[in-house]
Amino acid sequence: MRRAAATSRLIGLLLLAGGHPSAGFAQDALQPYQLVRSLQLIQDRIATGDHAALPMQAKLLEMADARLRSADAEDFKDAKNFRALLVYGMSGGNPVTVEAATSRAATDPQSLAIAKGVIDYLNGRPGEAIEALKPIDPMALPPDLGAFLALVKGSLLAGDQPAAALGLLDEARLLSPGTLVEEAALRRSVGIAVAQGDAARFALASTQYVERYLYSPYASQFADSFVSGVIALHMSISQDKLGDITSMMDPEREKVIYLRIARRAAIDGLNDLSAFASARAEQGRDGNTNHDDPRALLYASLSTVTSGTIEDVRAKLGKIDRSRLSDGDRALLDAAQAIAGEVVAPPAALPAEKLAPVASEPPSPEIATAQGADASGLPPVEGAIAEQPAVAKASGGPATKAPNTPAVAAASANAATVMPASAPAPTASPEPADPTDAAMTRTRRQLDLIDQMLGAAPK
Image 1 (cartoon, helix red, strand yellow):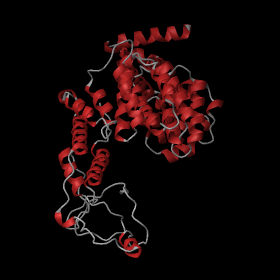
Image 2: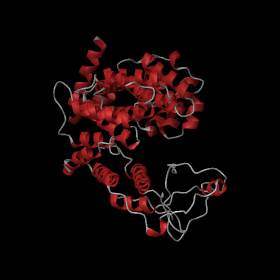
Image 3: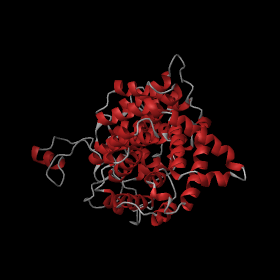
Image 4: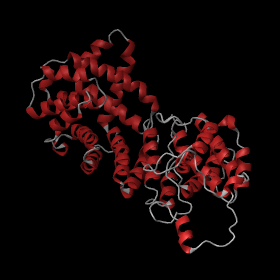
């Protein structure tokens, strides 16, 4: 505790001297490890929500960079200074500075191997970095260095060896609790757990992050991973568990999270999840409802846009204030209104030439079988449609770009031909013989086009 207090006083003196002519002399008199330790303390304050410390971080990075650039072989005889160089590099430092300082240092082979791995990591050479750092055990190093190294190794292995990566991120947290290292390790664990399909690990890491680092300036990255995880793991995470995690958030953040979940779930066709998230966004907390939020009303309406209450849905959509929506949500509103209108539109009458003639006598079983079977000899499956329509030029040219407005989307959906890939090109776009089936088919096509039109989450 006394050491932290002393370092905090040192930070204050350094920053006060930042604009003074003698600041350079004071900076040169400090050892590199003193500057880097001060930088770490500032970063830990940032991780717990002290955003006012961000300018201090920038200043200390600048001062540490200048001191390490001027450091010579004599400075690096002290092992603490070389460890500080490595920590500086893994704290967002300049790779040029790390490489230049390493070339002047005479230290042990393991430290030089770590330096090589850090330089490769900073310069975007993950393969070389993994190879250099592979034999080094973070738990065998001093905690300040081992924590950062475990974080870097875990990040490098996240794609190819997710299980090993999660173990390394756990080591990083164990070696450096309550710090920016733990914040980053938890945040990355959430994303890896989603990729692994590990709902239990996802829920645990999310709970720990919300408890400790919800106000970190990097929490928006956590929110992205959390929303994606809820969508990807919706079959494995109960609504009660989701409610437990979000209940630890402040009301505004909870509302935004539920709005984002509702939107993604509506676009992905997860109606139950969309309805749940929309309701939670509307309910608010402590009696502060969000019924006037047009986003909550829009996303709630999407989950029932093709239901039996379509007239109520159309009325709700018509009351939404478009001016309070983002561009993406305005397009989503247009698409929802177009779909709702299609659902309630009266079916078009069959053309006279398509009306089946009244047979004077019923056909024989053999003729009936032949008329009701396709070329494969199997009876047609009523209501079956293809997954995604392919919109191509009438001339047989390359596929056109997906429509970017609801009106164009509706027109393209109606004109698109839905056929198996192996079927010969038809001369006209077939529709189901029954007018109601035809209307529902067009509606399903429009719903499919929502994914193509609106993939981004709201700001």
